[in-house]
Image (cartoon, rainbow, N blue to C red):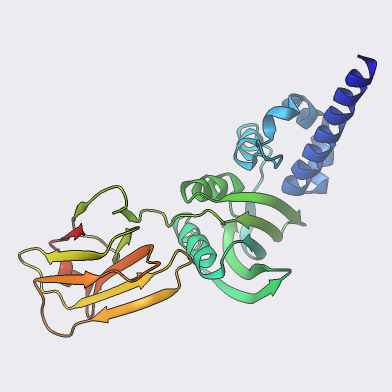
Length: 270
């Protein structure tokens, strides 16, 4: 009984120490030291801030910090900040996901400083022009929508951040579901139509009345590698295409302008 109690106390101490380190990495050393007593109080039930796999529950932790005014992200003036994204997952898909998220969070002004592979993981380093650092809560929530998650955050000073992001089981957000559905009727879109598909032999695409469709259809595997591209320079009302083996996503566009599909399309799988 005594040994069991000692083990529980030891595990609690380890969990608390690890959680405190992660919170310190998010806030920065100065802010963490300033608010350490409040942090200890807020996160006294430390075990509830862990996922079942033992990793920190970043959405929950960052929400608690934000709700209590501890997550300071704004700068006095517009700044150039450095951000390193280290991805556990495939490069093309990871980049597509993070770029889409940055845009959705209102971060448009950045350029790539470096892109490299280290120890079988891909790191994308950018310099971002912004009035506020990327909100880690909003980032973690956006990643969750894509079946991805943050595994580590390190704030280095006020102008440099490091993120480790797991995208191994990721999905492309807002890809239309032709996996559980046999048919889709899609209205006008501001982007090319992206379809998620599995175990289909062929698809039938019908361009609705009022369109002037010049087909541009791209088949991708699960990691967004291109398998096949089908282009037609002539107007098409409908098109039946065989689905290549290993296809997981299909992009349907027009060769010249998406406005040529302003009436939408319907897709049926065989």
